[in-house]
Image (cartoon, rainbow, N blue to C red; front, side, top):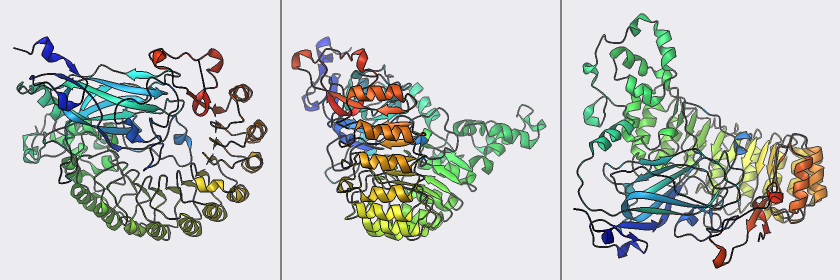
Length: 626
């Protein structure tokens, strides 16, 4: 017997108002954003930050740029075409995600619908996943996945940028027999023409407390989804014991030269190698060949990788040189102890280690990296928020570092100076979103002194950076190809640092001057005359630049392919439209905001006049479209 129709009603109030019926439909918005990979806003701010995705809609159904929205750090392929872009390695298959966000809901439900309120350049969501998580207790216990819980893919698809209209994205989701109060959205921004903005995410589901028995199909799916790499059943593996493998039934593969078999197996993905290893002794031998694991990219398996997975890989990875664990192991699926143990067994030959947004990375992990991975040339610790100040100093022992990403790191000035004093080969450095620094000028002085080969430097939202620090970089890093000083407000005091930059760093290909409001036409003339290789230029918020200054840059910088002039007040929509027609080979960005409609018109779809379709893009001039 089921509930009556009245008991199956949808509840839209707070979860505390749930019906006493055994099954009811509950609608709820995220209580909290508990993890994410990047954000356009800065930590501690309220504008354009990931935390804005919690709660009920504030912006929808308005369309355009609003500070109350959640906005991510990148869009399109521009960042991948920059000198600082990371080299791809390992087998990633069809994985396309480049951002994610985790949303915590107060009540656990069997999900029936997900509504994503997108308010600017929608269409970047490519995957929706759900899991059951235990929230923090009064004693301060952190979030962790419930016992035996796992991620379920509720929906997956392709990204597509739908311009000029808000969207409540409600894809058909998969029915699962597990309760959910944690939703992860995965994004692919590569097809977006400008920054994607989101308002809120609504989770609708049944609060059934009935025991519906065991779903055997779900049990077997769980086994298939686990990245099972061990041989011992007692350790949690689903592979057959070695002695159970048929010794000769290998389909005549033993008639082929071993080199040819190995060449064939090089095309297999990691999960295919796991399956093939259970087939026969010959296949197992080749699947365990250490040359297949010189490069290991596990980011695409983020929902399956666990501590057991790392344990199972240990035997195969003694020659490991490149490892990507980005997004893996969240909510206690991998512990710091698991990771450290793997490093001590397999990390001595590592040259590249990427740990983007990995919560298991702690101070102990950095100590292990510093002591074991002495050959390391690349280290990515972006959004590793479990690390605290005074955790990073040990990295000074990595004297071969050429690429270091510390985006949003809680690192101190002393630690940075200590690290950069011992890394003379540094070429690419990301210090975006750094907050715990009294002044970055001393750090820049040390960097310019000991890292003369620096090619890219990201200082996005480095609030304590002044023109003095940039003067050091301009004088000491003549090989600079890329510089991002967006939203470094102290640089607006004067532009003496820019004059030094154009004189001493003529190789620049990418220059982001976002919200440096003192930039004027004279500065654009210097840029045009001294940066012949310039490809990307961001002038968002440069209110003093005119059409004349912009035209000079467009004429002189023949390699320019990207220009953002949003919030440049003197460049009207008509002017930008003319520039696009004249310089059609250059992607000129000009954003817009539609004013909030009255209450009586909020349900009406927006219509952008045809004459504006070539000139609208993101945060810039406020456009009132009636």
